[in-house]
Length: 630
Image (cartoon, rainbow, N blue to C red):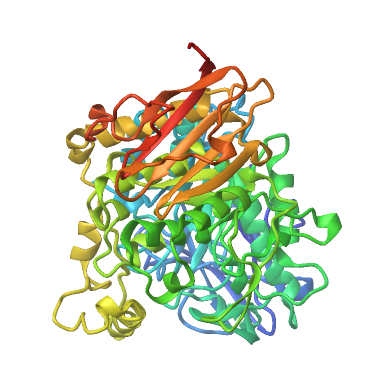
């Protein structure tokens, strides 16, 4: 039995369950006839067709007293024989081209009522792709790894996009069903269970979301309205989304409600927003400002984090909305990664050519965040970045690896496979001990050597386009300019590429030294009274050699710390005319930690002698101030 009735709703559109049935609502402006089609469990046999009634602003609605959670459904438009999936579908159990499923989020019984949420200070982030994080590639298998992450010292998981997409594997950035957790990793309740279990282990979870474009295959939003797309703002991935043109308000509502949905119905602790420079919005109030308000309202008393990836490096993202900002919490800092990558490998190609990889660059990134804060960039032929002087250190998210940067090497190799073991350990210390918020990419904590390639399962007509596009991008790096056609580069459309990108968890046992290095550094970051403060104002630094620098933490009680990093050969630093090397009055320096300890698979480090000032090569050492004994 189908009727029209006023029904309270959480989302502007989609199928929402009540005690009396299911309320369906769809935005389909400029269409004359919209029908709800309910299917049998096979997803092909039609059970019932009901005419939906028009509402204001292009919406159609229907209350079906006989519909229940688990029912499969779709919509017919203007007499079209095919029933299309719901753009606001909460689940696509048979794939993105098949009927949607009614989901009752209230059926999952949460166990995290006491969970307060997450705040930025003290976070250690960990990016993972559910499909390659474990051999099984499921939420259930990922749950089994939560004790490992807790033991290492991870406090906040960042899950790569999970909205459903075409095919059997992919990164998730070409999602088309934005409200539907992909069936590839399990059910929506499996996703909820992962978040619930993470909270039980004291770990927060944020979700990577893509609001700059839709995927090309399986996107049916245009069937219902062409107003989803902008005619003025193209992106490198396809049509931009209409946030500022005609009929933009329902599109804005679609996106802000999506952000709130993940926070509300899945208890995610925030969002990482992909490529915000491609979220084009010339409105007086930017979409991201509305999104931040909606997400925090959905969280209620819980604290959440909203973090942006922004290639233009615009700090207005983290400025308050009442001051014209977007009200987000943090920003990825590619500059830190890029200069460390050049320092570690010596490779300065394509966008890495914007960096020297010098000790001064690394120091500046640690102390100021962005390296480009408004200077002219010759490669881009424009000014890049904005000043960070009003930012806090924790608002800058630093990393040595992430999904993009690993995949952007010719063979999708991780940084530890591209540099010396000593340099890598030293840079890991820089990442994990300095004030900005550190982010690890899955497997980084045990020195994973498995590649992480770009992979996407597309139909035949798109496979060659995707392959050519990916290889064309990789060929911007001169080392790979002539490769790919004969199998030298991983084929993104191959299932083998996806399978090879899965972590080998036996490496966790084989690389015990690397795992211990990360565990010890994160314990030092968490428990040391100086490192744990994440305070830029305590920090000063100096270049002391061609590949060497020191960082000094000035503590109010003079319980200072000194981090000495040498990415070159052993350095006999004498004389030492550098004030930052001087211990506090009446004190001396003592070796507290070294990246070359034997139990990290290092070569060993001699006891530090403040008279000799030998800074070992390919090493980071931490010195602590202690009372002077003559």
